[in-house]
Image (tube, rainbow, N blue to C red; front, side):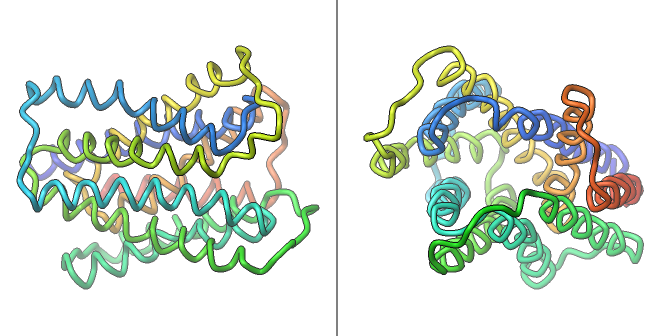
Length: 289
């Protein structure tokens, strides 16, 4: 039974890595404003939520603790995404992304302290390799942007804290809810609830592309993000949060890089090559954990 659960969480984590990896490779392709991309992403969560509801025969867990924890997961994730838009408005991506990429360190610390999660010595090596991969991929972006205000540090810190706590709260929600599906449904609800905020943040003075390569292509890309979030809930349910969080975040860029190499003849930078090796190594280690 233990072995079956181990491979179950890893299977769900692998689905998250693959869908997020494909999503990452094509996320820059649609010609669509970032805030409206958030709206499309929130909408793309709805069909996944309907699948989740169907899996539990529409018997949603409505106990207060389950609702608040699950809504908290969604609000931390979606709120962090909105804060990221602001951070990138004031600061360049090559500064913002590395800072938020190591958010799983908060998950690891909180899980070790409050959930008493433990891993083997090799497991800790795997976690370290995951962070090596995260840093390597986050440092490989463009560096030709300028800093317009140091407010980016404040908003990047909000993202860092929100996303780090989110994975921890997701584990708490899974522990207090009889099914993972209810957790995801409330995540979707909270994402949709913040759509008005994203619309208010949109610069409507700029033209908006309503063609195929606008909202429609954006939806096709963002549905992959939503599916990955759905399977991530299952991975957290059966696996340890301190493993799942860094693993999912570290390995998705490997797939994105592979797709970019195949489609665009993109040659990985030395940092990306190190990141790929580190990410693959941590997957092999975690498969034995």
